[in-house]
Length: 302
Image (cartoon, rainbow, N blue to C red; front, side, top):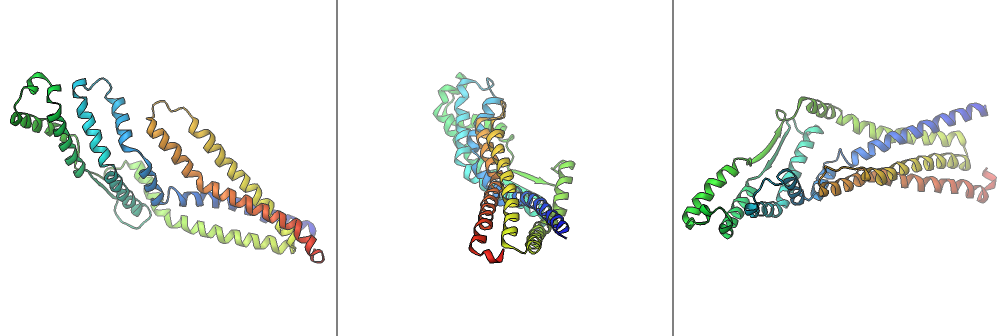
């Protein structure tokens, strides 16, 4: 009888351990990648202005004449001033995309308007033209103000053609393989919620079963405490290793500002698992302490 009781207790403990692992994964996903608020917050942390300068410096190195460098500065200044607006637009587009992925909308339609940015870019470029006319070619430097404005309008028309009025992402713009993954996620969004709450219910049943099998505070708290403590240590160790070693991997072609953002993103991505691991370690330690202290207080019940 004791053998069967021990075997059943071990089985329930093993199932509880597996359930904790599955729950930890779903808990992390629901708190991060499946949460539009988390993704929007990560976009808010991205330094768009600095990233634009770094990417442009890498791609246009040596291609922009020194006498025209002020045009780049005007462009970067416009982007920096419009960064809050761009992030607001990106946040709205992300939420729209998540509405589709999570089944709240029937169409994928993500839109980022660039009209205010284009207006500021034109104004700053024109101001830069006026203030740095002597830095341009001799022919342009000699133009009277009205001719300079005409020259600028012709120049800006060519530049403006490279900047769309808005970015639109819908089903026709997304590669088929990516769209297939999105549709699979969309179809299983409700199943993820069901599995999440189902695991919580299953763990409650498993804990209750372990308690009933032991029928003693000492045995139940020791069994549960050791299980929670071990899983908490494993969870926390995995998070620590990720935070410690993943950001140190060499990424020579990645812009510095993006590298900094990525390190923060990794830390935020595993933060829910870290919290869960710490919570389980603390809970497990408390239960183990109870299993030691309680019999001394109530020896007759053990």
